[in-house]
Length: 315
Image 1: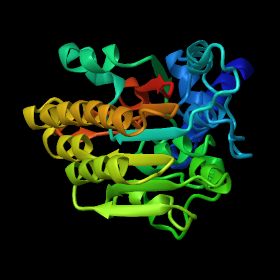
Image 2: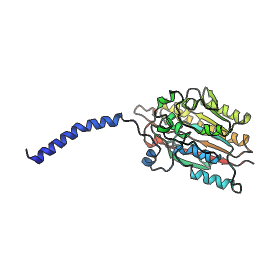
Image 3: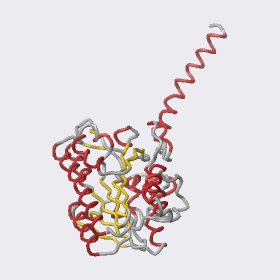
Image 4: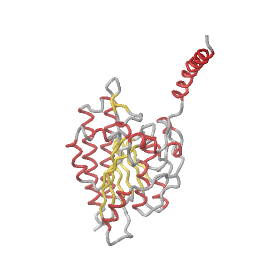
């Protein structure tokens, strides 16, 4: 065997021995998080981490120190145009509706169902979430403005840890400014758990429908400055039936209808206040090999969502 052939043989042997080791390392490695990974992968300029800095900017508040993204320019531009001759006007009341798993992948399949939401929205923002694309990780980023490695929830099971969110949230900012905040969510869901032990109110319900009804009651009878209403209906149904199953799509339609009803209720209750209503899902979904809905990957169906912002000046 020539020297050149021997070197080539040894190089190939080393590669064969090293490759399985490298693949094993990649398989066992911690999933990458961060805010820009999915933005770059899917060629999208916005992130769901911009929800918190955007709402803070609209309300004249300073976002949490660990928030890492700028406010959404498109939303601020609309607000600046809307307030016109009153450049010091700020948003006074905020309603955030969080419909779990209603990602961008649904829109082209059911355009007629989404049309009313698009028509009644001032600014629609398409953005990417974070990895892994599961509920507590994604909502942790949405309401802190921070990546998972900063806010503390890096996998689904982290939601069961005591005080899993390790940094200040949108809710802390509002509370520190003397504003009243309430989170309305089904008992035991991620939203009901991960933002606990803050100087705000919590209402745990038996269902998403009840959460919507409680939120309507708060709009009529209370004086909260920020209300978060969580809707986990579509997520729950699609996990058991598939993302396009008729039962799942019925749940999707409920989410859209409930948000529009809440927006109308907010207009009535807060007619004299500058106000924001927002539709902010955490992630999308796809069907697995068994035809059941799932999510958590970096694929577009899981990671691209639309957020809808609606702003009104008080009368």
